[in-house]
Image (tube, rainbow, N blue to C red; front, side):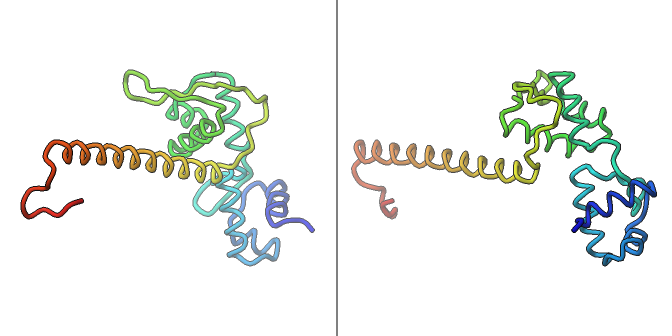
Amino acid sequence: MTSRRERIRRLLEKSGRMGIMDISKALDIARKDVNHAVQTMHKKGELERVVRGQYRLAEKSKRARMWKIVRARGNVTAEVLAELTDSTLQYAQKYLRALVAQDIMARSRRGDNTWVYRLKHDTGPIAPAQSIKEVDRLLAWQEIQEAKREAEQKMNHFMKLMEAYDEQYGEKPDGHAAA
């Protein structure tokens, strides 16, 4: 059985561009199901929004275009990548962070405080496959782990301060409970 997304893809190959209602009627699929599939395809770069509610197949997936530019340039900023691929800055930043999380790129700050991304491992002409959603999950987990390390360092520092205080003064000031 053919998936909804594949049916939508085939329909748009024939008709060029269509709205959600037109796709729903042509394929006899509930509007909400078409909307969900179209939004998923749009987020993955498979479809482009022509005007509000009208979509067409992307000439090349957004990630494939971004990957081609990353490979050709070697170093890139999110601003430049967004401009060259006609993407949003937010999407370009997410894509580049995903490549950093996969250890395909490294990032460093320029003098003007802009992040510059440098290609570390060229995986070939096909864009790396890990989804941005999965990378977002990985980045969130890494952020949690970093916060945990920082909290442990602060707790260790606190304990050393308490030990030093106890050694020097012995007891707590009047009216203050022991920690």
